[in-house]
Every structure is written in C-alpha cells, then in structure tokens.
Amino acid sequence: MMRRAILLPLIGLSIAACTDGTVLHSYKPLPADGWDKRDTICFDVPQTETDINGTLLIGLRTTSNIGMRDVVLAIEQIGQTASLCRCDTIRYPLTDAEGNALSKGVNTHQYETQHIPFHIQKGQSCSIRIHHLMRKETILGISEVGIRISKN
Picture (cartoon, rainbow, N blue to C red):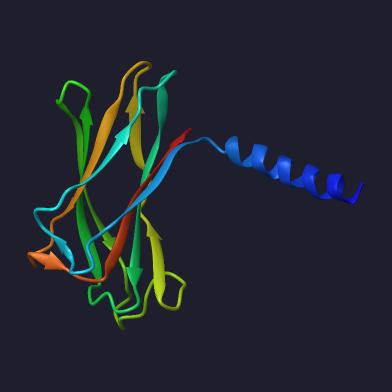
C-alpha cells in the first residue's frame, strides 16, 4: 500500500512534465579550452507530426569566472532542404556593471535568452545552429549551450 502511495504521485508528476509544451530540450558541452568562433553548435529537430508555432530559447551554462559582461550569438534555423529559414542575432547580458552574475549559482550559472519565434510545418525537420559573434576568437567560461523549443 505504501508503495502505491509513492508511485501514484510520481506517475502524475511525470505525466504533467510531458504536457508542458516542450518539444525539444537539449544541451551540448563545449570544449574545456574554449568556444572557438569557427565552432558551430548544431541541434537537429526531428520530423514533426504537427505544425509547431512556438518559441525557441537558447540556454547557456557558464562557470563562475566567465570574464564577459554579455555574449552575442547567431542563431540559424536551417530547413531540411539546407535553406536558411531564419537567422537571429542576440546579445545576452551575463553580468551587471559591477561584474555580478545575473543568475543564481555558485560554480555554475544558467541563463536562458528571450523567446525567439519558432515555426516548423508538419512533416518537416530542421537544424538549429549557434555560434558566437564575439571579437575574441575563442571565448572561455561557457561550458554548455542548449535549446528548448516549446509550443505556444
């Protein structure tokens, strides 16, 4: 009986988590020696069963000694025919004027960008490609880059 009392709430939470509208949520690690300007992070969005009109969020996980006030990223949505569907450039603040992180954390900080409109038609697939547009050739302190695609 006690086992059932524990399992039922866990099953309920699992089902609730699946209905939050998230289509894809994934992170990829960056090299420990830094993110080179020529390194493009790619995420494949599998073929969809329905039209998706939603949002794309870019996530960054950084170390506590990021050494930058903000980061500028290029985000490209490439269709399955290798055509560029959408390209956005975003500047995302990481610290305030005094150098204090704008997120909570001790050794690692997590950031998510503003909502970027995302659309893909039923039966289509695409790739999301991200690279940095900073002046430095290699930037240090970003450990992972991720995406989250959600339906509206």
